[in-house]
Image 1 (tube, chains in turn brown, green):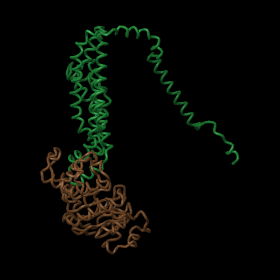
Image 2 (tube, rainbow over the protein chains, first blue to last red; image 1 turned 45 degrees about the horizontal axis):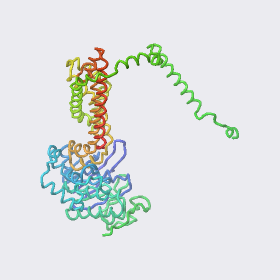
Image 3 (cartoon, rainbow over the protein chains, first blue to last red; image 1 turned 135 degrees about the horizontal axis):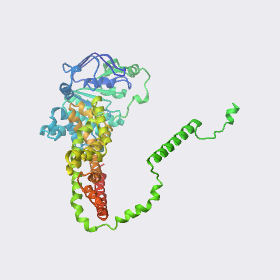
Image 4 (tube, each protein chain N blue to C red; image 1 turned 180 degrees about the vertical axis):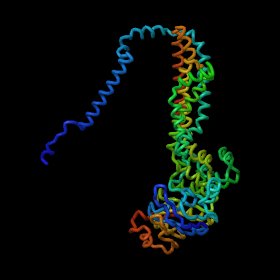
Length: 258
Length: 266
């Protein structure tokens, strides 16, 4: 369970990233955060694994207030909270397998990781996760040889390999075409359901949010302006969240044909 | 309205720019003349004393080919010096490269002091380093090696820290986000991005070291330069030209091999 209590974040330049957020996210939920760019979605998500540090309030993850974490305890938190990025963030010159095994770094000593001395179970886990996203045949390809969709699947495999309790996804489909976007969202949804991993995804496409989310949180200017089950959300709700009428580029479209 | 319509610009530049350029030009010429007069060196002397040059060059020919066998031991000494100095410099430079890159060393104080130390090191010419170490450790190879190491570290760290500053930081964000510590983040997200350039620059520094170690011999820091110095003092010019030709050939071959290796890397 993740709980935001009166959480605020002010950046050093004075910008308010988050304004007094109070939200409770339950275990196993698939939450989609929507809002225009600059609404604070990214700050919201990055607070949960402390890539940014909120300046006020409390943020409870797995029973602990994570705002005081540093060094070792921060790395322990990040082992539990995996993250997927808009630009995949793979090491392009490394092989797919090396990128995926990087998910085990938090569990592996510095010396062992430098000399690639991973236990057999870790290698097996990495390979199983590549199979889950159907990319196991690219095992030894360099990451930059893969297409965008394939790279994002590798990054999902990397996140699974760290055996997280929570997955954060920051605009995971913003760089992909519509069919590939649906494919990636389907993998995330499937993992959420099969492994009961709490998943928080930032999106700005309203059709995808409605299709995949259990619950939608709307943000504008650092504040939560909507919070409710995806089934109750309509285009009208989005117009209220965005503060303007819905445009063509708010919709991804193109359902995958499988 | 009509008056402005009749205006036709007479110059491509505004009068103020022209004035600035003219003044700058006069100042530069003035500095040149003052420097020439006070040092009594006029470039025209080059042509007036052309006779001396041809006379001296004439004494270098023909090269003394019988001298060739005396060159090899010292030449290999030079190459060994370059190999030892480059290897050690490459190892030493690794931590300094990271400390001198602002995206890895986020501590401003540490980064700035690191940069300052490196700038100071780079202002010292290799020949001065050699003179200092010959004074400290005596004439010979060892002094030359130490001078080359410091010289090479200065170059390598400068080149590599700039490469490190230009890398894509997204992968290291991902490694940190999955619980990796600092060393793991560097090893998994930084090293793969910079390794080809690092090897390439190391070979490049090896080329520079070969050439530098020839010069260092002139001040007694070992290698083939020492041999040149000795033969010049004995006015044995044919032997000197043999040495110079052999060095030329060897440097060209080494540069070519190293260049080919570097081409294959990046």
